[in-house]
Image 1 (cartoon, rainbow, N blue to C red):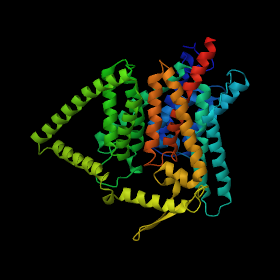
Image 2 (image 1 turned 90 degrees about the vertical axis):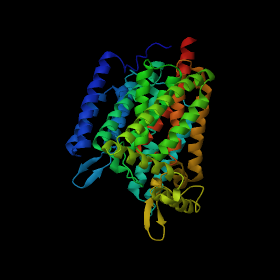
Image 3 (image 1 turned 135 degrees about the horizontal axis):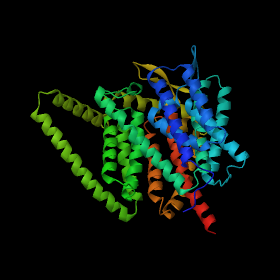
Image 4 (image 1 turned 45 degrees about the vertical axis):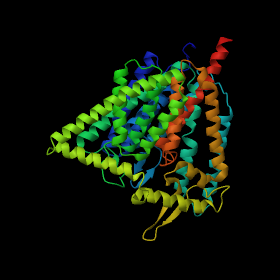
Length: 490
């Protein structure tokens, strides 16, 4: 293992105190955003705090702040703009922290406090090419009278601005310790959002679930965004569990159980499919001896789950006339309704809307399949009884949205980026005996994101997309850390 890199003093005592203080202040401010108002004074306080904490050279505070505050407060950290009178300026707290972190890194490089090491490969060049192409499409939207420039700029931010965190990570996460601490921080943040599940169960409905209304009967006890973060944490945790890297298996299993309950209670059907897909993929990637560990834990977990369900069902039957029994029956019916709607798509208005939007978007793409329709465009949905214009970027299928907007050219570059990243990871991750469980979890996490993006606009929503670029950047460090180790040992 390499010695601690003085260029990244994130976890030294003094810097840890600064980071903890930053968490406390930011949580208070973002909490005020979430629960009280969108006052410009709060926004300005966030702006000032970001500059004070991160500048001139505390660049290493940026990534932990982004991870924790996004997981806890999701849209109130990532989508809360500056509101003055009736005007909304879409510079979000997330953007401010990113800008401050990039500036601090640039200052550290200029003052030689940080030694810059640039080792770009195919994934980096393809990502740069993708970002340049999207930039050209933004220019195209400026001169297109049929394009909504505000929507086009928002797409530009999601496809160009937020991927910059990928480069920030491959420059600053250079050692085994850096990677482990970052992954552990994601898991710890995921454990904290169990509080949101408990609040949802206690109040009879989850916080911030109004942003994702149901197309069937039922109640979400956890916001879909928090459920998505739980799914990423769950796959990371299972990977570590398979390698016996968790100090307390019992406590870890309890946390994992809450994450599963949260994902189910969110009633986000695509996440149910997503978890099944990611578990199968992770299992296939695991070495043979670690598959045996998963078998062992799966048997124990299965027995506990079945026993718990049997006890709850029996209690509901014995006390049939109680509120507990009635609530249990209602929630069971809602879960069954959501599950069966995956098969009976014709009876689900959400699925019908998606299929119609995808078909109409394809009709638009057929007119220019090579270069696509461009950014900021909408498509008319005509079902006979109902007509409406829908933004193509919001078509609840990120990969299809890329194809329709950027055409075969843009989609091919993005696909090549994913392929190059996957091949690079496959080449390097199995050479890391110590970091293998982390990289397998990150690889499965990237696949989890891409699978989920087939059903939601995840790449077009910054509070989701930021974690794809974080996971992809962390996965890419498999090549960087190993090369640095080889150099140090020569």
